[in-house]
Image 1 (cartoon, helix red, strand yellow):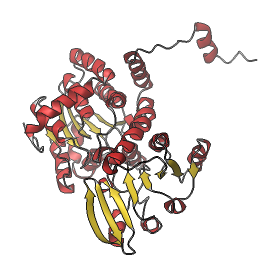
Image 2 (image 1 turned 30 degrees about the horizontal axis):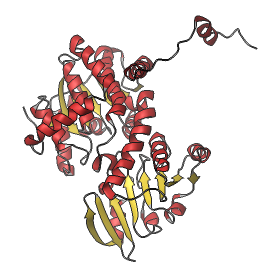
Image 3 (image 1 turned 180 degrees about the vertical axis):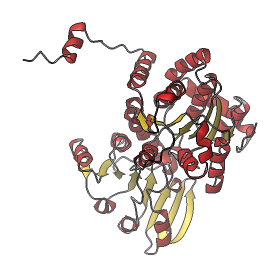
Image 4 (image 1 turned 135 degrees about the vertical axis):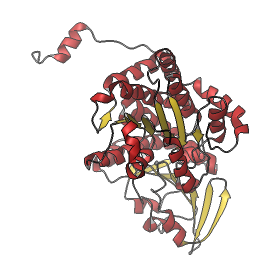
Length: 418
């Protein structure tokens, strides 16, 4: 079996951590039982470009239980948990191509290694696999039934491909499922981002001024958790509706350049490029902490920061201190990459349970329905989304009401009024 990981000897630790995460992934466990008996993915090859974490490992194990040949590579150079990668190879026989801290060349080589199997289904987190296939590996498309996409950033890229008429096979936007973005993006990103910042710096957030750039679901989550720890949260936005929502939620809202004069900590979660750039670095206070929790490391203009600096040194494992020519220091966390995975462990398993339940069930949906699908970006079928929510409630021991026949009829009719 071909693989490329840091050290196979780390497998023992990784297996324990995979098993620990599985204890909090009850929905995926139920799906694994179904997959084990039904084998809906039998004979199919699935290439997964995802963050190689304990939660992802449990998804891969579930896909394999469904009969799939699973191949995994990292979707970010700094997000791999090397012990998990080792366990996937040694304990579960899953070809894995991922090393934490790998350079850009190795990152793309690993993607090529994963897709060289000739996948029938692709599973993306950021659309790098789809992008590479469309640019350089078009011959693989003839074997591909469809794919899934996990992130907001990836869905944006795929919708762009679709709009231009260039998308070569159907993709299900797992990110847009209610049981994904309402929970993973908000509660997962919120907690894990703050966790990453605190682990990297050990700063006290209470009483600090913390800027959240972007008030989508991820931004809402980060702002919520930062305020919960006592930070004075400032929201910066370009969308007037989202900015108004932030105001109604009780946050200070202002232009980024103005916020830079006050802020101690910055978090970007926009999915766009050069959110923090030269004009903002010029306005920041000495000792400002800058981090990103968007998928790609493009939200902070690092080349501009380097060009403005006279000195750079690593002061902590995930903190690079840039000294500007006027003597001010700006601390960049995790090389501008996803701080929740670069310096911490990513989302808690219990929230990834729903996200990866979507991935598993959507791969089954593709396998069964690919002949009906066009070369488009699809929403997760509502019955899958609702079923995952029901399974999650059941796993938590929570029961809810159901509509009476009279209520259902009322909601389906137009005749009744006041």
